[in-house]
Image (cartoon, rainbow, N blue to C red; front, side):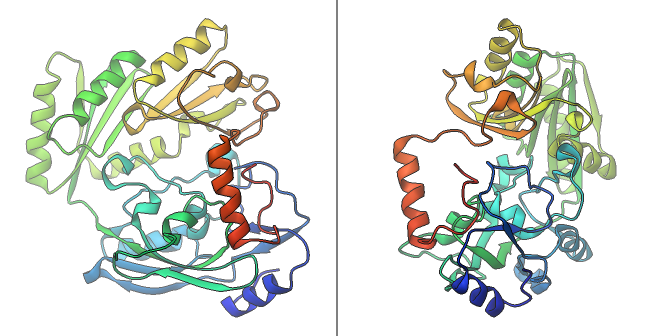
Length: 371
């Protein structure tokens, strides 16, 4: 089923008698636990930009619109989505075009999250059809204070379990005039993360902070004069380190796209895990795994708060990291037979079940994807 209007979608869901799997571009089908559904519901027919107001830094777009089409339209007006969404195709080995609805459903957020917030923080309005076929709207083209459920935030990261999104509104950012990547060479994980924390604690408005392959990368963006000034300030801050600086915008975009897309692990035959933890926990995680005899490689982003681990396919790292505070998700591979999503606490699970009963009382939307 591929509805082309919100009315068709509403009618289909109101008449649905069995669970359905919601599919956008099909590029993230591996994310989440196995879905208990035989039928698919495609959002590809709900496509197109409804409104783009460059002067107001506002975009309204239908959920099935390919992300590349959104980015092309924004490039033409020199603007961008603040949260720098990741493309999972290389990492997951998937084909097709990611949709903007899929990005929101999974709350996909890239390296710039440390400055601009996650996908949900740029989302200012949403229209969706719930599990009963009811059309619901929340938010709009401007930020407002509201009471009741903050459905805009709830829908981001709900993996399609609360409703099928039809239209999304975003606040935008102008593209920066200049950028610079300050690269520190030869640091181990612990010292690299320490350097990132030092950079983020400085007044230099860092919006990218990553570490991989003995390279510690710090990004700044903005007006040319400001970027030049902050580059010199960061060079002084790390004067005792081996440093290189990249100021070519195209090269920086390519570099940070590679980091955001975790391209370093795209060709490996391992399980890929995503961990959201305290920045200081990342090196300890690697130390724990290596002491357990587990061969692991890591990429750190968000100043060390986001860790991607490449681990042999027969290993469930949750069995070795029970003392770590954070969130561990299996993105790719067998993971030693692990479920993709972690088991939630009774409190969180109760809240999630309560929300699903409210918006999908018949339990037909992406059943099982979040456990």
